Length: 143
Image (cartoon, rainbow, N blue to C red; front, side, top):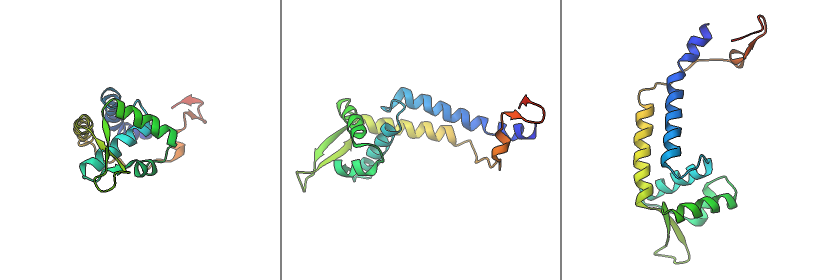
């Protein structure tokens, strides 16, 4: 029973994570894809710090297949979340820049994350794998 009380401390943060995931699904162009979320965050970040990545840099910054990145990037471009701009110094380079739509979504996303997690403190449960066994061997009952 003691383990259950300790595990109960995880419920509020887990509920917050689930609420964030619902918000992501409804408001971000990620389709529950880690690749799409990475693209969204990386493109937003580099636009915000005024150092947009070239296409080549973007492809090298994410550990996913080139085909997958191309597919997700094409969708983001088509839906006007971001755009490709020619570099002023070298016209051969294409910079990936967030559109207003993406930056507004990033603003809302940061608010959602802040609201979801600000009231939670780190919970150090110091649990071992054995604490999570579904079946208690001595009683053959589900914990």
